[in-house]
Structures are given as C-alpha cells and as structure tokens.
Image 1 (cartoon, rainbow, N blue to C red):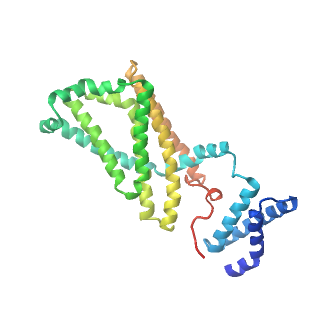
Image 2 (image 1 turned 90 degrees about the vertical axis):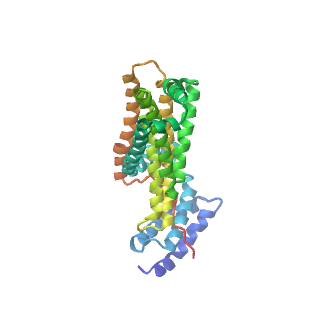
Image 3 (image 1 turned 90 degrees about the horizontal axis):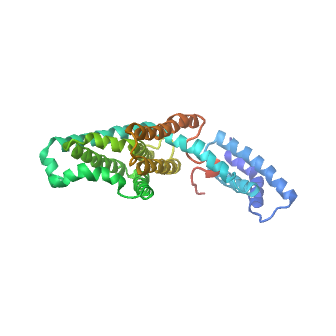
Length: 331
C-alpha cells in the first residue's frame, strides 16, 4: 500500500468524520452520515494496520474514530458491564501473567525468612542483641499472641488491611526501580524470620505457625503477587521487546496497576480473617481451614480463571476501544 496515496484518497472522508465528531448537535441526516463515515473509517484503519502497521495517519484516524464513537455511543458501555469485564477478564488475566514471578518471589521470601529464623534461634548472641532476655520472653509468651486481640475486631482488621495494602501499592508503584521490591520483600521476610526465631528460642514456635497460618496464607501470597507485578513493570522497560519502552510501560503499567485493586481486595479478606477468625476460641483446624479456603480461592482465580481469560486474548490492559492509539506521534 502507498500510504500517502491512500491517505490522500480518503482525506476528505476523514476530515468530514472529524467535523461531525466535533459538532455540538447533529440532525438525523448528519447522524446517519456520521455512522456511515465511522464504518468506512474503521475499514480504512483496519487496512492501514494490516498492511503498514503503526503510522501517523493510522494513529490520527484512530483518534478520530474514538471521538466519533463517543459521539454516538456516549460511553463504551454501562458501568456494570465494565466492572463485570474487569473482574471476569482483565484482572484475572493480569494476575495470570505474574504467576511464575510470584512463585519466584515466594522462594526468595521463604529463603530469607528461614535464614533469619535459623540465624536468630541458633545463636545466643544474636538473641541478646535483639533486646533483654525478659523483654523477649514477654514477647514470646504474651505480646505475640496478645497482638491479635489488642483491639476490637473491626479496628484491628482495618489496621492490618491498610498497612498491607500500603506495602502492596508501594511494590507496584516503585517496582519500576528494580530495587524497591527486593528490598521490601527482604525487610518483611527478615521481620517474620526474627519473630519465628524468638518464638523458637522460648519453645513457642508452634504458636507462631498456628497464629500466622489462618490469615498468613492469603496475606503473604497477596504481597508476593504485588511484588511480582512491580518486577514485571521494571522488566517492561528493561526488555520491551518489539515495543518502544514508553509503549511497554504504558501497556504493562495499566495492566499491572489493575492488580493493585485485586490485591487490595484480597488483603481486605485476609485482614478480616486476621481480625475476626484468628482470635476466636475455635479449633485450629477450623481457623486454618478458613484461611486455606480463601487462599485456594485466590489461587483458582489467578491460575485457572486467569488462564481462561489470558487464552481468550486478554492481558489486563485496556482494549484499543478504551485506550485509543498505542503510541504518541508528532507530525
């Protein structure tokens, strides 16, 4: 295709389409003309992209078509449909894309936590450096378990949720640096490992795992997902592939910031489990079972439902109808 000749041949139609799209009011004849020109323009854009690919005329026509579409539709779809599409397709597809990175971050997290747990529990000098013996004994025998009932169920759940959601949002927002995610995961794993080491020193390691297990399965996994999303945003500009770095950041950034919403909701669930379930005088098998059910539910949503959405062509990013042209051009 000779793009210049093609553009010149259809320039009058495209200008008329832009003119009608910008009009404040349309009569019946003009509305019919707008729809006819829109359909023709969509065919023109398809021909340009098929034969030429990304181009200045194509991007301009894409923008004009977007304005025309809004002219006769008002919005792309109703709000309920958009919410349904987000949770049924976009979010699970984005979660599916970070599945293996999540596993890798999880291995790193467990390794750091296990190292510090063993390091603290096996060396009396390290224990002594963490505080007085009596203070550590009080922590192991009273403070660790008392933490879960120090405030009301609602207040405690809200505190846990907001703290974890803040950490998750940071991992995605600052993931582009490539340094924040390993640092944040290291600090959190170190804290958990030190707590486990102190509890082990005073023969209460079983209590540590019992109190962590109900909420910790979903809570920790949600943070790992957020960390994985942050790392992939970093990788999108390090190795953008056939895309420009700006295009890769825009596409993957939109997709993986959708994960923020999913992680915030999963952390809300884990916060409710931690604030309500963990403190109950129920058998541990029931409390841990509740935590396992919500965690497995999240895994099914990410790995099974997300696989279906991803195979259907969704990536978590906005579709072209919403996003318009994929790159900014001048000329």
